[in-house]
Amino acid sequence: MNLLGIDFEDWYHPELIQQHVSIKKDPIIINGIDRIIDILRKNDTYATFFVVGELLEYKPELLDKILSNGHEIGFHTMHHTRIDSLNSDAFVEELQTFDRLTKGKSKGFRAPTFSINQKSSWAIDILADYGYTYDSSIVPAKTSMYGIPDAEEKPYRISSISLAKNDPKSKIMEFPIMTTKILGKKLPAGGGFYLRLFPLKLIKNAIRNCENRLIPSTFYIHSWEITPELMPRLQLPIKNQFITYHNLNKAKLRLEKILREFKFTSFDRYIRSSNSS
Image 1: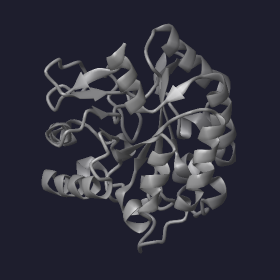
Image 2 (image 1 turned 180 degrees about the vertical axis):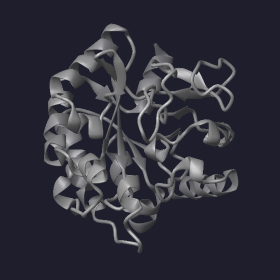
Image 3 (image 1 turned 30 degrees about the horizontal axis):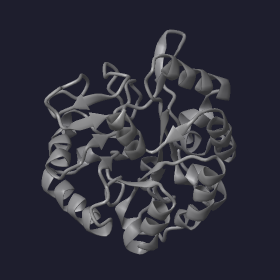
Image 4 (image 1 turned 120 degrees about the horizontal axis):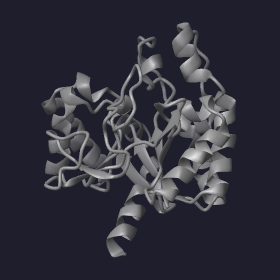
Protein backbone atom coordinates (compact mmCIF):
# COMPACT_ATOMS: atom_id res chain seq x y z
CA MET A 1 0.00 0.00 0.00
CA ASN A 2 1.24 3.48 -0.94
CA LEU A 3 0.54 6.93 0.47
CA LEU A 4 -1.11 9.85 -1.31
CA GLY A 5 -0.95 13.39 -0.01
CA ILE A 6 -2.72 16.26 -1.75
CA ASP A 7 -1.13 19.59 -0.93
CA PHE A 8 -4.33 21.60 -0.96
CA GLU A 9 -3.32 25.17 -1.69
CA ASP A 10 -4.47 27.96 -3.95
CA TRP A 11 -2.82 29.43 -7.03
CA TYR A 12 -0.95 32.17 -5.16
CA HIS A 13 0.51 29.88 -2.47
CA PRO A 14 3.44 28.14 -4.25
CA GLU A 15 6.74 29.72 -3.23
CA LEU A 16 7.78 30.49 -6.81
CA ILE A 17 4.54 32.42 -7.38
CA GLN A 18 4.15 33.89 -3.89
CA GLN A 19 7.22 36.09 -4.29
CA HIS A 20 5.59 37.76 -7.33
CA VAL A 21 2.16 38.40 -5.81
CA SER A 22 2.22 41.69 -3.90
CA ILE A 23 -1.40 41.92 -2.67
CA LYS A 24 -3.77 39.37 -1.19
CA LYS A 25 -5.74 37.48 -3.80
CA ASP A 26 -9.03 35.58 -3.64
CA PRO A 27 -8.89 31.77 -3.68
CA ILE A 28 -9.87 30.05 -6.93
CA ILE A 29 -8.49 26.51 -6.75
CA ILE A 30 -10.78 25.67 -3.81
CA ASN A 31 -13.61 25.58 -6.35
CA GLY A 32 -12.08 22.38 -7.68
CA ILE A 33 -12.54 20.38 -4.46
CA ASP A 34 -15.47 18.37 -5.84
CA ARG A 35 -13.53 17.46 -8.99
CA ILE A 36 -10.57 16.28 -6.91
CA ILE A 37 -12.75 14.17 -4.63
CA ASP A 38 -14.54 12.71 -7.66
CA ILE A 39 -11.23 11.61 -9.21
CA LEU A 40 -10.30 9.87 -5.97
CA ARG A 41 -13.72 8.23 -5.73
CA LYS A 42 -13.57 6.91 -9.31
CA ASN A 43 -10.17 5.38 -8.57
CA ASP A 44 -11.21 3.92 -5.20
CA THR A 45 -8.49 5.96 -3.46
CA TYR A 46 -8.30 7.75 -0.13
CA ALA A 47 -5.88 10.62 0.42
CA THR A 48 -4.61 13.01 3.05
CA PHE A 49 -5.36 16.62 2.20
CA PHE A 50 -2.58 18.81 3.62
CA VAL A 51 -4.57 22.03 3.67
CA VAL A 52 -3.38 25.63 3.92
CA GLY A 53 -5.41 26.85 6.89
CA GLU A 54 -6.54 30.18 5.49
CA LEU A 55 -8.57 28.28 2.89
CA LEU A 56 -10.59 26.70 5.70
CA GLU A 57 -11.17 30.14 7.15
CA TYR A 58 -12.42 31.31 3.76
CA LYS A 59 -14.52 28.22 3.06
CA PRO A 60 -15.15 26.14 6.25
CA GLU A 61 -17.24 23.56 4.36
CA LEU A 62 -14.01 22.22 2.85
CA LEU A 63 -13.42 20.28 6.06
CA ASP A 64 -16.71 18.40 5.85
CA LYS A 65 -16.23 17.64 2.15
CA ILE A 66 -12.84 16.09 2.87
CA LEU A 67 -13.80 14.11 5.97
CA SER A 68 -17.27 12.98 4.85
CA ASN A 69 -15.73 11.32 1.80
CA GLY A 70 -13.36 9.25 3.94
CA HIS A 71 -10.24 11.36 3.43
CA GLU A 72 -7.96 12.86 6.07
CA ILE A 73 -7.11 16.47 6.91
CA GLY A 74 -3.50 17.49 7.53
CA PHE A 75 -1.73 20.76 8.40
CA HIS A 76 0.13 22.74 5.70
CA THR A 77 0.57 25.96 7.75
CA MET A 78 -1.95 28.80 7.71
CA HIS A 79 -0.52 30.79 4.78
CA HIS A 80 1.87 28.36 3.04
CA THR A 81 4.89 29.87 4.77
CA ARG A 82 8.25 28.12 4.82
CA ILE A 83 8.87 26.81 8.34
CA ASP A 84 12.44 28.05 8.30
CA SER A 85 11.12 31.61 7.94
CA LEU A 86 8.82 31.31 10.98
CA ASN A 87 9.72 31.35 14.66
CA SER A 88 8.37 28.82 17.14
CA ASP A 89 5.80 31.20 18.66
CA ALA A 90 4.31 31.98 15.25
CA PHE A 91 4.19 28.29 14.38
CA VAL A 92 2.41 27.43 17.63
CA GLU A 93 -0.14 30.16 16.97
CA GLU A 94 -0.79 28.79 13.49
CA LEU A 95 -1.05 25.23 14.82
CA GLN A 96 -3.59 26.28 17.44
CA THR A 97 -5.66 28.14 14.86
CA PHE A 98 -5.65 25.13 12.52
CA ASP A 99 -6.60 22.85 15.42
CA ARG A 100 -9.60 25.05 16.13
CA LEU A 101 -10.64 25.14 12.46
CA THR A 102 -10.39 21.36 12.12
CA LYS A 103 -11.84 20.50 15.54
CA GLY A 104 -8.63 18.68 16.43
CA LYS A 105 -8.91 16.26 13.49
CA SER A 106 -5.39 16.85 12.12
CA LYS A 107 -2.58 14.54 13.21
CA GLY A 108 -0.19 14.99 10.28
CA PHE A 109 1.92 17.84 8.94
CA ARG A 110 3.69 18.73 5.72
CA ALA A 111 5.93 21.81 5.61
CA PRO A 112 5.49 24.07 2.58
CA THR A 113 8.31 23.54 0.09
CA PHE A 114 9.47 20.63 2.30
CA SER A 115 11.15 23.23 4.54
CA ILE A 116 11.94 21.09 7.59
CA ASN A 117 15.72 21.39 7.95
CA GLN A 118 18.33 22.08 10.64
CA LYS A 119 17.11 25.68 10.96
CA SER A 120 13.50 24.61 11.50
CA SER A 121 13.97 21.28 13.32
CA TRP A 122 12.27 22.75 16.42
CA ALA A 123 8.94 22.26 14.61
CA ILE A 124 9.14 18.49 15.18
CA ASP A 125 9.08 18.97 18.96
CA ILE A 126 6.10 21.31 18.71
CA LEU A 127 4.18 18.83 16.57
CA ALA A 128 4.78 16.14 19.20
CA ASP A 129 3.70 18.48 22.01
CA TYR A 130 0.40 19.11 20.22
CA GLY A 131 -0.40 15.46 19.71
CA TYR A 132 0.65 15.09 16.10
CA THR A 133 1.79 11.61 15.18
CA TYR A 134 3.48 11.98 11.79
CA ASP A 135 5.24 14.32 9.39
CA SER A 136 5.88 14.12 5.65
CA SER A 137 8.26 17.00 4.97
CA ILE A 138 11.55 15.24 4.24
CA VAL A 139 12.84 14.66 0.72
CA PRO A 140 15.88 12.31 0.82
CA ALA A 141 17.50 14.02 -2.17
CA LYS A 142 19.04 17.47 -2.64
CA THR A 143 17.46 20.12 -4.88
CA SER A 144 17.98 23.86 -5.15
CA MET A 145 14.99 24.49 -2.87
CA TYR A 146 14.99 21.64 -0.32
CA GLY A 147 16.15 18.16 0.56
CA ILE A 148 18.15 16.14 3.10
CA PRO A 149 20.06 13.70 0.87
CA ASP A 150 21.24 11.37 3.64
CA ALA A 151 17.74 10.92 5.11
CA GLU A 152 16.20 7.47 5.27
CA GLU A 153 14.03 6.44 2.34
CA LYS A 154 11.67 4.28 4.40
CA PRO A 155 9.38 5.53 7.19
CA TYR A 156 11.28 6.31 10.37
CA ARG A 157 10.91 8.15 13.66
CA ILE A 158 12.12 11.72 13.31
CA SER A 159 13.17 14.16 16.03
CA SER A 160 14.59 17.67 16.23
CA ILE A 161 18.03 16.20 16.92
CA SER A 162 17.78 13.49 14.28
CA LEU A 163 16.12 14.66 11.07
CA ALA A 164 17.72 12.10 8.79
CA LYS A 165 17.93 8.88 10.82
CA ASN A 166 15.61 6.89 13.03
CA ASP A 167 15.25 8.09 16.63
CA PRO A 168 13.40 5.35 18.53
CA LYS A 169 12.53 7.81 21.32
CA SER A 170 10.54 10.08 19.02
CA LYS A 171 6.75 10.20 18.93
CA ILE A 172 6.69 11.48 15.33
CA MET A 173 6.79 9.10 12.36
CA GLU A 174 8.35 10.52 9.20
CA PHE A 175 7.11 9.47 5.77
CA PRO A 176 9.81 10.69 3.33
CA ILE A 177 8.91 11.52 -0.25
CA MET A 178 9.76 8.85 -2.83
CA THR A 179 13.00 9.18 -4.77
CA THR A 180 14.66 7.45 -7.72
CA LYS A 181 18.13 7.26 -9.26
CA ILE A 182 19.00 8.59 -12.71
CA LEU A 183 22.56 7.97 -13.93
CA GLY A 184 23.58 7.28 -10.34
CA LYS A 185 22.13 10.54 -8.98
CA LYS A 186 19.29 10.38 -6.45
CA LEU A 187 16.38 12.65 -7.35
CA PRO A 188 12.85 13.26 -6.05
CA ALA A 189 10.23 11.25 -7.91
CA GLY A 190 7.24 11.40 -5.56
CA GLY A 191 5.01 13.78 -7.49
CA GLY A 192 4.56 17.49 -8.07
CA PHE A 193 6.96 18.96 -10.61
CA TYR A 194 8.70 15.59 -10.96
CA LEU A 195 5.46 13.90 -12.01
CA ARG A 196 5.26 16.47 -14.80
CA LEU A 197 8.98 16.36 -15.66
CA PHE A 198 9.92 12.68 -15.74
CA PRO A 199 8.52 10.00 -18.07
CA LEU A 200 5.60 8.23 -16.43
CA LYS A 201 7.41 4.89 -16.82
CA LEU A 202 10.20 6.16 -14.54
CA ILE A 203 7.69 7.19 -11.85
CA LYS A 204 5.95 3.83 -12.04
CA ASN A 205 9.27 1.99 -11.76
CA ALA A 206 10.09 4.01 -8.63
CA ILE A 207 6.77 2.96 -7.07
CA ARG A 208 7.42 -0.69 -7.97
CA ASN A 209 10.87 -0.43 -6.45
CA CYS A 210 9.33 0.75 -3.17
CA GLU A 211 6.81 -2.09 -3.25
CA ASN A 212 9.58 -4.62 -3.92
CA ARG A 213 11.42 -3.25 -0.86
CA LEU A 214 8.20 -3.55 1.17
CA ILE A 215 8.05 0.16 1.94
CA PRO A 216 5.26 2.57 0.98
CA SER A 217 5.94 5.07 -1.76
CA THR A 218 4.97 8.51 -0.47
CA PHE A 219 3.45 10.45 -3.34
CA TYR A 220 2.11 14.00 -3.52
CA ILE A 221 0.33 16.29 -5.91
CA HIS A 222 -0.87 19.88 -5.61
CA SER A 223 -4.53 20.79 -5.89
CA TRP A 224 -3.71 23.23 -8.70
CA GLU A 225 -2.01 20.44 -10.66
CA ILE A 226 -5.23 18.41 -10.62
CA THR A 227 -7.32 21.43 -11.68
CA PRO A 228 -5.03 23.23 -14.17
CA GLU A 229 -8.01 24.95 -15.79
CA LEU A 230 -8.34 27.05 -12.62
CA MET A 231 -4.64 27.96 -12.45
CA PRO A 232 -3.84 31.49 -13.72
CA ARG A 233 -0.78 31.84 -15.95
CA LEU A 234 1.57 34.47 -14.62
CA GLN A 235 4.67 35.83 -16.30
CA LEU A 236 7.49 34.54 -14.09
CA PRO A 237 11.27 34.30 -14.41
CA ILE A 238 12.17 31.53 -16.84
CA LYS A 239 13.15 28.92 -14.23
CA ASN A 240 10.10 29.63 -12.04
CA GLN A 241 7.87 29.56 -15.12
CA PHE A 242 9.21 26.14 -16.13
CA ILE A 243 8.89 24.57 -12.67
CA THR A 244 5.38 25.92 -12.15
CA TYR A 245 3.76 25.35 -15.53
CA HIS A 246 5.74 22.65 -17.39
CA ASN A 247 3.34 19.89 -18.51
CA LEU A 248 0.71 21.23 -16.10
CA ASN A 249 -2.10 20.01 -18.33
CA LYS A 250 -0.72 16.44 -18.12
CA ALA A 251 -0.52 16.09 -14.33
CA LYS A 252 -4.11 14.96 -13.72
CA LEU A 253 -4.00 12.33 -16.47
CA ARG A 254 -0.67 10.99 -15.19
CA LEU A 255 -2.03 10.83 -11.64
CA GLU A 256 -5.08 8.89 -12.79
CA LYS A 257 -2.92 6.38 -14.65
CA ILE A 258 -0.88 5.82 -11.48
CA LEU A 259 -4.00 5.44 -9.33
CA ARG A 260 -5.40 2.85 -11.72
CA GLU A 261 -2.23 0.75 -11.54
CA PHE A 262 -1.21 1.10 -7.87
CA LYS A 263 -3.08 1.16 -4.58
CA PHE A 264 -2.88 4.34 -2.52
CA THR A 265 -4.43 5.43 0.75
CA SER A 266 -4.30 8.21 3.32
CA PHE A 267 -1.56 8.39 5.95
CA ASP A 268 -4.05 7.84 8.77
CA ARG A 269 -5.54 4.74 7.17
CA TYR A 270 -2.06 3.35 6.49
CA ILE A 271 -0.96 3.92 10.09
CA ARG A 272 -4.11 2.36 11.53
CA SER A 273 -3.78 -0.63 9.24
CA SER A 274 -0.12 -1.09 10.18
CA ASN A 275 -0.91 -0.86 13.90
CA SER A 276 -3.66 -3.46 13.65
CA SER A 277 -1.60 -6.00 11.68
